[in-house]
Image (cartoon, rainbow over all chains, first blue to last red):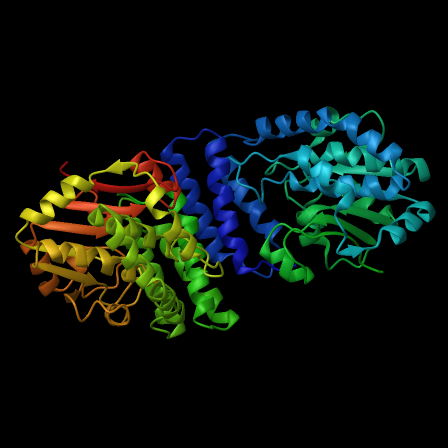
Length: 287
Length: 287
């Protein structure tokens, strides 16, 4: 997916918020802003938004010297999600369709996204969990996905955000119940509030499934920036489950067998998918 | 008031919206975006936000060839406000304090601001009018203003937006009832949805008071960019009533006798005034 012009203001906002989270003095924040604006004025827009976001956050980390400005936010949302874990587990266990319920919860968790939300906002994940069973899917390839999970030889699960990764754990357990060969990928370096290896550990995922990282700081999968070992895992998978907007942005044109699970949170993704903001989807790109 | 870093994303958004309102093809919109980003990366931030906005909208008008992208929106909100005029007039006439009620309505009209609001949003001015008498003023220099209106030799009233200018008419009539020597200023050229001479005519102001224009396309008063005749009117006034954020941004450091009437609509103005978004004020800079 190319970068829409409406993405630019969002990247500008994010850069400023990241700088503020890094606790930078005004002079550094201004330097970040000027460098990001200049880069955005020059970068080709046929690259994905995730490319632009990656470059902006590299500027933030270089200028501020803070390698993970969202760390405290990420830990907070991991904790909050873990506080709901037993409740969510009961929802899945009590459901007549645990696979779909767990998939829906994994999508519900996708709201914990500080690429989209203002970092000063307080995301109420309790109310999201409560609303989950009732929300209709705007694109509903859940049954196709379930069949593919059963028949796949090797599944790669691409996570999105911290906090959300606790929600993913329930769905990954459902997948594992059907097919053991699942590998879960987190980001190789901190970018926005995307989940890294630390978050996989906090979420309790580390003990139940093999975790790899992308070897890269893109908030999505830019394959040529990923480590060779990640590229090999990506090539070896015959089913890829990709969470969130960043993975959609970077993989929507991929020829691989990918199911996108996400909540539509911004106008650019809404236009690209032909959907509305707030819609939730399970979309297979070969269905 | 200097430009805050949080202003930048707003100017980027505005530039894109203005280009879309101008009906420009994607190539022109991208050209506008790149030029605005480059300018924002280079301009000194000790200038006011209104300076930056003026420059951004100059780029929009130059690239798109559309001299007034907000024209239809401005006409729409003039009409909507005029539909409420009789109701508002009755509110003022029935009030035990017509001066304050008219001042409050003038501030209520300040919500019609597409520098702040997304152009796709529908601003409900009916509900604003209904809420007006109940809203407390966070800075309340109404009585000082009323006294100064009575004693002033020459009053200059600086309008802000189209639509809002209909609300201003009620307050200007109250001022005129106390002191005939009032001059009303609109912008010299179209910028965002700021009121120009056309809007003064549509609002029915043209027939009841002398209207001048700033001779300039700044969404505020950048004196050295204004016409000589406007500068003379500005200097001749011993009381200035300045509506809205743009006039506050450009005149908050002025040594002149100015009363700012506005609704706080963005974080930068909130921080600068030490107030919260949504607050309304009548603030004399010498009180």
